[in-house]
Amino acid sequence: MENKKEMRQWLDNFGLDHPLVIGGPCSAETEEQVLKIADQLKDTDVTVYRAGIWKPRTRPGMFEGVGAIGLNWLKKVKQETGLLTATEVANKDHVKLAIENDVDILWIGARSTVSPFIVQEIADALKGTDKIILVKNPVNPDLALWLGGVERLYTADIKNLGLIHRGFSTYEKTKYRNIPEWQIAIEVKNRFSDLPMICDPSHIAGRRDLIFDISQAALDLNFDGLMIESHWDPDNAWSDAKQQVTPTRLVEIMKDLKVRKKTNEEEAYRHALNTLRAQIDVVDQTLLDTLGKRMNVAQEIGSLKLKNNVAVLQNKRWNEILGKMILEGQDRDLSEEFILRVFKAIHQESINKQEKILNS
Image (cartoon, rainbow, N blue to C red; front, side, top):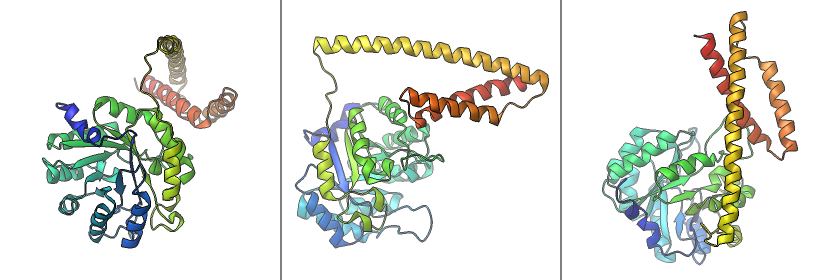
């Protein structure tokens, strides 16, 4: 990607001495609600005021936003508080109206990023704009879709781009609304190293009590900012009530978060870090060797099943292994969620190898 440094310039231009904070309600509900929240956030470290004007919902009949009238409320926010404004756009008409009403930052939501047709329509409508455009990760953990969405906007000569990590849907029950899958966000950040990466802990959490920890994790991973939903009366919000915090709580979160140094040039620190990294390299190599040995055994099992015409998947055996590993993982201070993800991946690779033998 050419002109990478220019693409990041919009964040640097804010001249902030702290990570960027985008705060405000999930949805604009009334003019009074929008202005009241903005007034409570105007003298804080919040730089950008967010409010959903159009809300893509999963099922019909749900609140889908107030529509274009809410853009007038955002203009009043800017006039009365000096905060920049942001909202989600999901088609070319949204783009046109948002630009006409001088919204500063537009983001493409997770439900839109999954469709190259939608992203391309938005990119065409935005072509050459100097507005700040942020791209949320797609609903599902599909790296290519997220990368493709960014590439479509870059090709449209969008001058100010950024990324939003809001987690990924999963059929498994976890404590999160959307699992973080930090490694995917890190991979995208590595691919587009000069695009600012914002974390949306509200959508990852789905509950307000998890927002601080997710925010801290994002800052520990050198994310450039946070988008946190805030409502003056969150329990009675018209959408996503459980994941919104009051402006007062948002200020507390910002105050308590620790911003880490990206590095430390002191010799003692670097020596200790290099020593620990060398230990990790050795352990990683051992892991790979062990996994290779395990897959060799899996292939032998596959050959044995082929000779005896036995099916690959043995549910009883698999459930016994999983239960045992969860218990042993607890003894090693490894979470059940981590053990499930690791051993499900190992099990799937074993199945793949055995199926290849049976189908050879």
